[in-house]
Amino acid sequence: MSKNDEMKKIRDEVLALNVSPLYSCRQTNHYYPVIGEGNHDAAIIFVGEAPGKTEAETGKPFCGAAGKFLTELVESIGLKREQVYITNIVKDRPPENRDPTPEEIKLYGPFLDRQIDIIKPRVIATLGRHSMGYIMKKFDLELELETISRIHGKIFESYHNDRPLSIITLYHPAAALYNGSMRDVLKKDFEILKKFV
Ligand code: URA
Image 1 (spheres, helix red, strand yellow):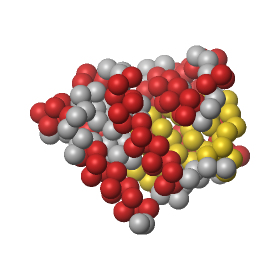
Image 2: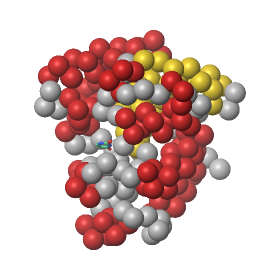
Image 3: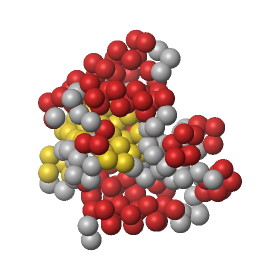
């Protein structure tokens, strides 16, 4: 099966996921699930938490205010959005932008795992603490897990199917929207990614 077909299969399975606690919110509001967007051969995957309202209305990840800043950050290291892959752990919008629950992360996590298997990135950049926790545990880095304020902007080395994988822990771009100093921290942390470009 081609990578495109494998991604479509994931989309179809998420569309049919009526056991999700977020399914009724999707149906009631005529939202789309947000699977991911970008290059299926990307060296870098960005993993956020869950779609917000704008994302659920369009089906595209990071297309609202936080997404605009993410695009700026990606471009600041000399890449275009189309060259990377952008996704979330949870594929449906949690109501009122609340944090995803552990149950939702458990339900949607395997779809993200499959996306990582399809793309085989060299780097996974986590955006925010939920994504950081999920990815670090998945890649056997649980012992190095600390609060995001301690480990933002760091590189952790692991393996994915015997290939080296670097994990970079970043703040969520939404944290910088109303906080100028956080904006500068994110910009600086992003520079670490330059060595993989
Ligand atoms: N926040 C996220 O974590 N993901 C999105 O797609 C948009 C906002």
